[in-house]
Length: 540
Image 1 (cartoon, one colour):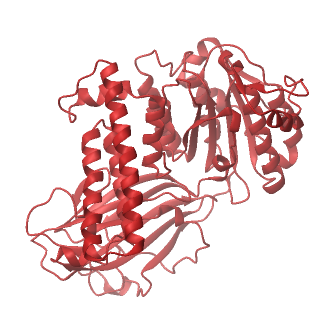
Image 2 (cartoon, rainbow, N blue to C red):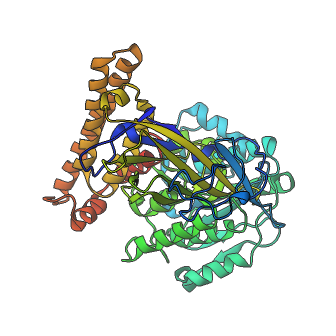
Image 3 (cartoon, rainbow, N blue to C red):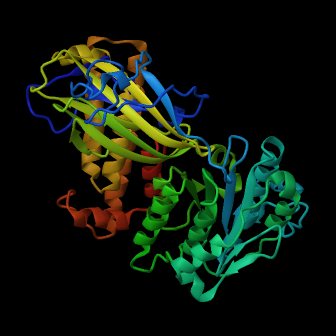
């Protein structure tokens, strides 16, 4: 765990939010970065849910164990319990993973884009049939995407040949370009049936490793043709259903238009429910979805981006003239089905960045985890807690890439002070900044723009207050950088409010359900993309 300060601050007054000094971060992405030596024996649970740390009583609730002889003697503050070994079924390992490219081939992908002549010439090496001119300064969106996918296949074939890569395309129908066997196609009424699409995927096999099919797969990419509408929803559902056969798999969806055929059509009233369902199921099955849309197009990213949001994928607006998929593909899942349980004495409240607050314990479902995945939490120490220190235990359960199940237990004791200045002078503003960015992004997503801005200003004022007492070059630079970001945020708020005026929207109460819905409908793809990236702490 990473703490904003060495001390927790107690308060005599009731507080709705924890002070910034009481923030801590759990870096879930570090779960599987190093090999683990399992702890011996099984964890011993107290009736409160915490795990005994070897003491004669539970540090959280102070109860004694029913049978003290069964309690393990523990000296390490971090323990890793192997709950179950890898099962005997197809799974992703460090060397082997499944990536499905889901590519839009609808008519709009024929739109021409300008590129430097040397860029065009450099892409000729991919032997894409439609790129016949020896020299040119234009290519279409599909050609740019084909070149990016071919580049990534070449890189993976050389560095990670056991990677399995599949190709799905969608226009007016959905096609799975199998290497062994005929292309599988979803058409007509099946595009509007959730069950039929899932059943269709269940009858098909995931692709073989690149070491076996690399060149043939590249030919399939080259043969893609433009035409038709945009069956984005059915293609996404099919890709996620197929990917669920392989643990910790990835789907990379690339599109330039609005879904308008079959399930998930944006014109249909239940489109949001469809993408929420697809995202929820993908998350539970250990599938990560990244959504890439073309800049200067409208795709209703607010809706389709929610699938990436809940599955720890990436949401990006891409420039086809300068397209690379390298960073998307390399950012593989480290663990799935991740859940955190946090325990403190019952007089202390635990609050997640999503503003959930519970006394003494909090269950926080995480889902998929990548290398940089984290979540922040805060503690509210009220007047009823009279001790000078407080124990905190975090239990993290997850499924590793090889399918083994683990439980990691963190134990820590934090000193408590009533002097806020002591804790503030110790502040790690990087931890506080992570918390503020997550909270602000969630508030913006809920349509609470003004509240998000107020929260950002609150952090700025805290930083100024600490610097006035203990100025250092590092903190002064941090304040300068933060003020620059705050200025950008204020401009973004101005743009969003101006867009609302153009939409004919007047918000009198940002906390109302109607206000949240109105702002969601009015949001541009660019704004939605920035919000999703802020939530994942990936910048704008």
